[in-house]
Length: 385
Image 1 (cartoon, rainbow, N blue to C red):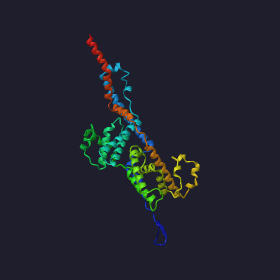
Image 2: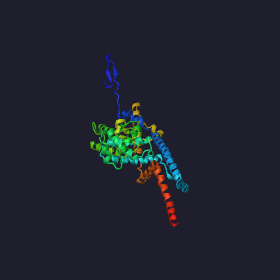
Image 3: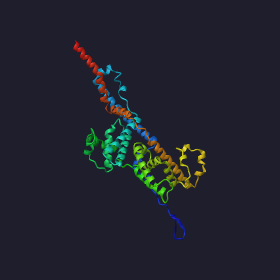
Image 4: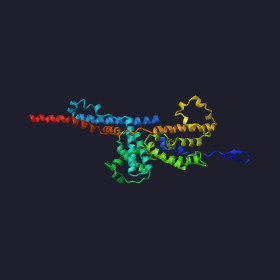
């Protein structure tokens, strides 16, 4: 009699219902993070564009008010220098692609800030998550990233139970006051819809490390060159990969933490990870997983009829799940490797960001510069007379 069967009172065998298993992935899909902050690539791009459009509209309104005010105060200068003081020549608003680059650069600054305060990795990860979520709802043309960055770090420290007083925090920051952070806390919380709990990929990564051992090493090793030391090295390098790529990219909005964790293992050692997946999901360990195309549309008819991939319905479902999972983690790896903005790009975007936030200063500087030669000429003429 199998574990699924038992003897009933009338002598017949009855099937014992299988115990339900809830994975980390299942738990995550029940969370507020998945409900509110998970997107497709298309919907994430649309979200960024929407925030950018709102920011551009606000920045344009702010610029028009400053421009009209200064034009009324300096009508002569604006009349003489029409071309130089043309509104289209004074400010160039940012695109959503430029905003994304600038936000990415500031995520790197969050890493440096957290490291400077010797904060745990969990605080660093949460701070980046809060910062990115804020800018899915707002534009850098509304709120400059500098103080949003510091406030995100401070909020993350409180959320992850890393105690630091506001006095101690700002004492080690340059040109930052208490109100610069405290005044933004509620705005950030409001933009986050008051969801501070963040699920990260490091916990499921440790779970995979344990499962790799159980599957590949016990009761006996299934790969002659894989030992506990091999898997320990794989785990350490996967953690480094997450820190270098996953936390700075947008993959947390597109994939679940277990998917990202498995992608890290796959990116570091494809051969070991594929063997793990075969042992875990496939009865036929000879199936070549490397031949799996990136998308379902790429599957050729002859591949569909491949006898080596045919099995019972249950095995077929497991195979399809495994194939879908591999496609998913490959896509995750691809999307995690983004081009970093150059220092020159970041500097230029930062300059235009400040101009969008403070258009009055930009226009005033231009007016003073154009008025200076006129003043000099007038003084010279008066002296001669």
